[in-house]
Image 1: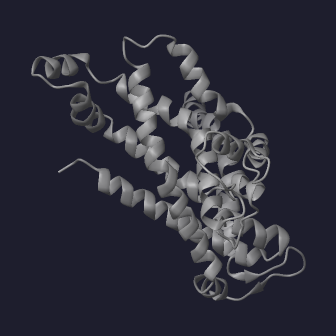
Image 2: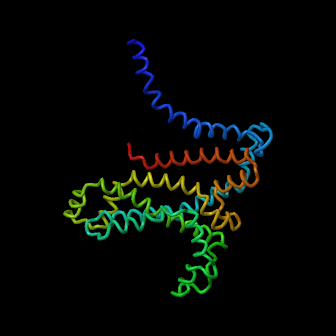
Length: 293
């Protein structure tokens, strides 16, 4: 009786945690392994899979659109992420200060875009960025900044800027709240000591605030990197990857190959390479920002 009870007590913890591992295997691990397997085959979604080895990967590395998608994502990343993190840190510092009035309202106002459906926001931006009748061009024209309308969605570089503006609008408040949690862990005594030593608020911002939220900045940068290279809805609705594939992203290319061209083997090779690339970039960023000697 005692031995049976001991066996049940030993097995019980594994029974309690088994649902997580079952769900992880069925919905995460198995699809990943199956996708890796498909990447070595030629399969259109029906019929038999033909094993072709590394042909999909050879084709992918020679595909100009794949390298262009990575180039586009890198440009969009540089366009909005440094500005987003800088503005997020400034807003977080302001909302974390004692003199700021209406903190709750401004926090909510900046975070609201993160709640709104990205599809709805994308369609609104299509209207705002319309070359002839969009609000952006109308305002710029009325205040005298432009004479001719800006082709927001028709020009390759302006299309990238348009996607960057939308992503900045959507994720600024989210990153601001993350950075605010880092600021709240900084002791006020450091700022008071710096003030006594004659440091201005600007110097305190650059020599106290930024160094002490370094790890949170790294976290936001890694998330922004993965998010930028994973962009799909924004460029799909705004520009459909155009003009001239200037807003084509790896995930948008993956969607095209899988659900439009039904080339699931090739699409799976894109997914595998994309995963390896994102993991590599994240590890490099963590190593660069690592402050351990």
